[in-house]
Amino acid sequence: MPPLHTSQTQIHKYRLALLPAVLTVSVAELSTALLQGGVDFLEFVIRHDLGPLWHHRLQAGNALGTLPAGYVDALHRARMAAVAGYLPQRAALDQLDKLFAGKGIPYVVIKGVYVRECVYPDPTLRPATDIDVLVLPQDRLAAAKLLIDSGYAVHVTPDNVSHEATFKRGLVDIDLHWHILRPGHTRTDTTTGFIARRQQTHGVWGLSDSDTLFMMLTHPAFSKYVCSPNMGLGRVADFLLWLQQGKAEWSTALQLLQTEGLKTAAWTMLTWLRLLAPPGLTGMLDEWLGIIQPSRLRRAYMRAWVTHDLPTRFLQRPHWIQLGFILWMHDRPGDVLRALHQLGQARLNRLRDARLLLGSDYQWGQLGP
Image (cartoon, rainbow, N blue to C red):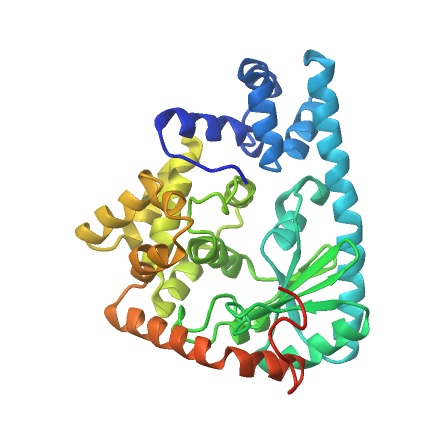
């Protein structure tokens, strides 16, 4: 993804790119924004995986004819590429459901691949690079074996083997998770509750609405550094569509944020989302921000990281981001100490965890990166 910056000019550009995710925006406004933005803006939209959504809104409003042929072709290619990516992923999801159901393994699909089934008018409009699946920690070995026996090659990395591994087959990548975040970031094991509260949408098992909101407000904060190039605008579009369709069960999500000590993480994430939200949603977001705001000093510090785009500046120094930004997303000093302790334990045990998953004779470098 291209880097994100938080100058007023750039924020305006991001808001324009997100216009198709604002349900009250007319197609006339969309076509005008695209034409005024020019080719550079069109390319920006497509790089952020928003091209299919732009194409859909303009096509549904019979407004493609107002654009130059080159614009229409570029948007159409983005739409077709998204469809081509969706079809093998959906087939893999259907197969995975049969495999896991046959062995009695409960699971949920998380993040973009599930959100697109819930709030997009057509799930093919939301490209996704991989499928994220969450299983209970005690089921991870059985789930991994099923995927390997089905022809998937497993890839593990030292930094992530404590909570996830990647399985690749052809055009499909499946990230198998047994924790949503690195152990220690939450106070309790959230996986059991997530799976117990799961719901099915268009044949896909996913998180409940409140758990999805919790995930949107916490997972990108830790894994994508809130506003870094890793975040992208597609996740912001997910969030905007989720809110506008009345699926944001705030009170239940708030209880979970309080229980897990992650209100500061959610506040930081909401600060970024608030910058990009349309006027009709800012009142709701301001209310949420007021409810979960940390101390004045912590607010100023975390806001500085977001408004000055420090995660992007320090992207080549991830340890600085971890120490100076990520750790401070925990609500209490005890939460910070727990996260540090668990990080140390994960480093000590990563080869053991890999061997548990892949076999006792596994050595780093045999499989995957």
